[in-house]
Image 1 (cartoon, rainbow, N blue to C red):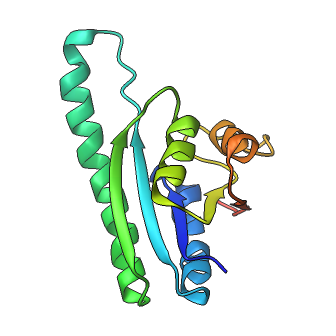
Image 2 (image 1 turned 90 degrees about the vertical axis):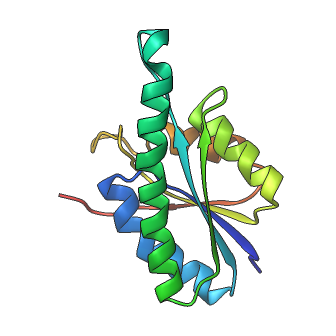
Length: 143
C-alpha cells in the first residue's frame, strides 16, 4: 500500500519517540523510508548565515544518520536528506514529498517547538492541511 514513507524529523524528543512507529509502518509495507531534516537558518545577522547553515546541516545529518542506522537495523531501506528550508518547513516537507513520490508522511504531533498543551505542532498542522498524500500523526508521550 505504501512504497515510500517520509519521516521529517527535527531531532526532538517527540521525533525520536516516533521513530520506532515509523519504522514499524515502513517495515510492514516493505517501503523505503525517507528521513528528512529541514535546516531553518533563522539568524538576525546575514553575516552569520553561512556559519549557522553549516552547523545546522551538520546537526541535521547526525539526526537523519541516527534514523538511518535504526532503519537498517530493522531491515528497512532508507534514504536520508538534509535540505535548506524554502518558504517554511511545512512547505519544504510537502514539496519534498511531491518530488520523491512519497505515499505517506509520518510526523509526531509535536516537535522541537511544540508546546505540550497544543494538539498539533504548527509544522505538523500545516503539513496535514497542505499535503497531497496521507499524513499520519503519531502522538507520543515525552516527559
